[in-house]
Amino acid sequence: MSHQQDDILLVGAGIAGAAIAQAFLQQGQRVRVLDAGPKPASGTSAHAFALAHPGLIRARPLLQRLTYIAFALAQQTWQPFWRQEGIFQALKLGTDFDEDLLNAQLLTAGFDQASAQPLRAREARQLTGVARDGIWFPKGATINLEKTCATIFSKQEKLTYEPNTLVASLSYDGLHWHALDQEGHSLAKAKSIVLACAHGAKALVADLQIALPLKPVRGQLNQFQISATSSWLEYLPTAAISGEGYCLPARYDATTKTYILVVGSSYDENETSLASWSTSDMHNKQQAAALLHYAEGDLTELNLAGTYVGVRCAANDRLPIIGEVPTLPGLYIATALGSRGVLWSALAAAIITAQVQARSEQQTVADESIQAPSAALARLARLGLSADLLAAVSPARFLAGALPAALASNSNPIFPLGSSAK
Image (cartoon, rainbow, N blue to C red; front, side, top):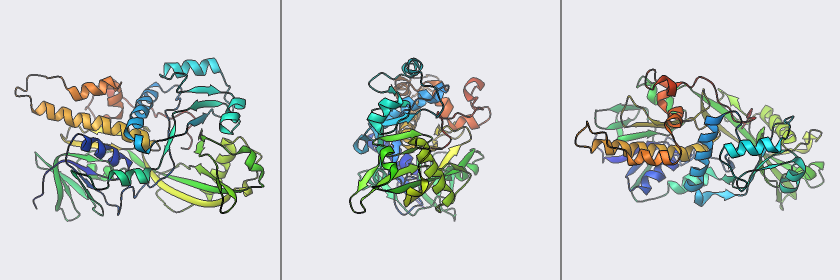
């Protein structure tokens, strides 16, 4: 079967696919998107309450650098959808508040006083409604992922979006990548293909003799209804709070004359169930009590009003997998975004568009012995994406011998500060 050749073939119409498609379209490329779902963001990106903030990640300098850069990119990438309301990162309960140390750590991480401010519990209570020590990030934001993806994949020039299209396997003919259906028929072809299909990328590259250590992570988010006479009212947040999970500012529902508190989420590794679990309901009630520093709160006064369940995709080392597969030219991966889809999707768009352009630049050099500098990769360097950071997220870290040992070593898991659940 013959197809019109597209510049970029993209598998997946979630938040990662949306960021990457948008970046290529802005460059004037022809992009074809294949997605198994009936509409954009049919999977984990069907989420209206995604948080985005850079956070302070103590003792994890590499992850801190990546997060700081990704947050700046996310502000640009998602600007039309960015609801900047500020986010408060609560310190882990029992952690001593050392303002001088926190300021030093924030300064080392690249923050100034305008972008991150340590707050004692008394100050935090006045600003956020929650009496806990922590750090205020005034540029923190929330994003409705579902609406964002729907907007990106609406009708655009040079964009072809094909829902209800399952890609069962891939093939490479030496010039083009082909996405194949379950009968082995070609659905589409292009010189460059990007797998932004979360856990689905694992099976697609397994046929190419690549083993990605991906695992599903189920997450449940709850909306709790709180009576206007409840003792919880005194503790409800007026700003988004992150820490042991997260919660959004409480809002008043004039119809029911109650307050709605959104709390999440559970972190259930190797689970794929999309059913609502009563154990997760209780987990989130307990998280609410911890986040709001109201351990004595009556959990029965948190009445279940709604549930959202999604299955995130994570790598064993808790870092995203972003970039070109060095052994297979023209194949790019953007997966394992975990609970940081807003940030890592923007990072993926920057890295993958630059790598595709760099490969194109290389192919136009008449004499292959001349190593012409890549303008595209130079832009990544100016963003702060040095070789060690690119190597840390590259698919190559899972390919034996693909990288020098100093860059490929990534055996120690990297965890965000206090992140037992996100």
